[in-house]
Amino acid sequence: MLNVSHVTKKYGKTLACRDVSFHLDPGSVTVLLGPNGAGKSTIMKSIIGFLRYEGEILVAGLPNKSVEARRILGFVPEIPALYPNLTVYEHMEFLARAYKLKDYKDRLHELLTRFELEDKNKKFGDELSKGMQQKLNLCLGLLPEPEMLMMDEPMIGLDPHAIKELKKLIEEMRSKRRTMLISTHIIDSVDMLWDRALIMQEGEIRANVSRDELAASGKSLEELFFEVTENLTAEDMTHSGENEA
Ligand code: ADP
Image 1 (spheres, helix red, strand yellow):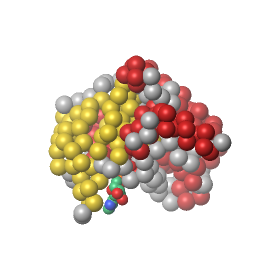
Image 2 (cartoon, helix red, strand yellow):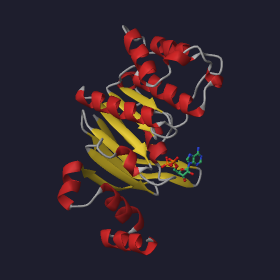
Image 3 (tube, rainbow, N blue to C red):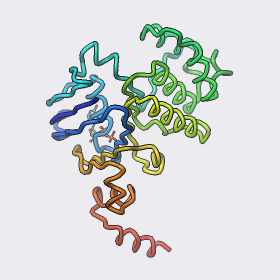
Image 4 (spheres, rainbow, N blue to C red):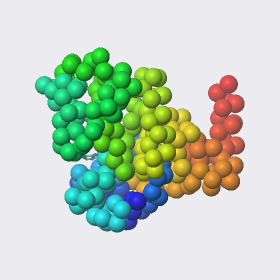
């Protein structure tokens, strides 16, 4: 569904992604883990076509910046880009028209209800709290039901109800065979959701494992994460826990 080959991105002298390659199977959920500054947002922005980079990115075999690929790809950015003078409802309508969606009204109201925004649908973008902005940001990404959806740190700023709804929506989209790439630096927030995990650090992919491969190794995702990013073994982690106690 997605093929990322040898992608390198520099911002001036900062090497944000170095020779990044991976692919996503259709209908799979992949989590992209890594500490702050690992390059997760940069690779996602490269895939969606916001940045220039070296290397090749294909979406269903199509160049990612082509019109056809853009129809397949959806993106929920980490920082919501809302219009101060459009209401919640108008944001959703605006997006539906931009994507030329048909028969979207039921889904529009369902999403606003599930994220507890329906009774706030007349509020303007600049009247929303940070959490409400984040929820509207998610509703906008989810409304078109793209074949492939990328979400950059989607759990940040959400209340427990919204996190529960988002996890349910991810499961629902998985059952409809949508492909998803979800970045996070909080490992606990994505447990249960993933088929494949990528761990990035300093602009490189340091681990790429399926759920079955990880289970066969006997490690938890957290253990693998610290082994890869801090050279810690499971034993080190147990001992550090003992020292803290
Ligand atoms: P992550 O999403 O994993 O936190 P980013 O992709 O945002 O990481 O950042 C990767 C690296 O690129 C960091 O060193 C960051 O400081 C740098 N970076 C990100 N965006 C820019 C930018 N617009 N200009 C310069 N450097 C940037």
